[in-house]
Image 1 (cartoon, rainbow, N blue to C red):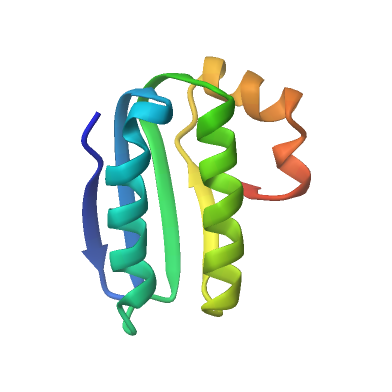
Image 2 (cartoon, rainbow, N blue to C red):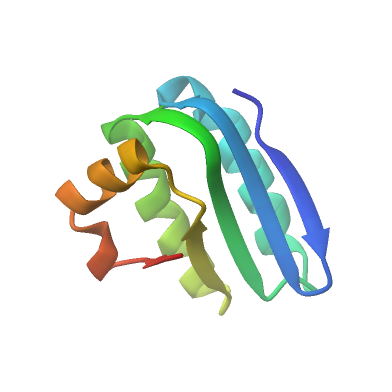
Length: 101
């Protein structure tokens, strides 16, 4: 999985596809750090539209990202989650931690 980044005005979108697991750690971290460092980006969206699987390491990556985004005074939302992804997020109680749209 290679995440792609789209920036439109103050919103940075990380588009994921395929399996979101530990093998995506390095690329995911790099693209997210790019958005965090971009002073014009105020909101970061993680787009799960093309994700068919995520594991516990992906959940950990999201939690670390949430901390970094908060420290940078930006907002974070998880968007376009398929049913399988929503189930994992619900089981992990991520709806209480993240904005899921």
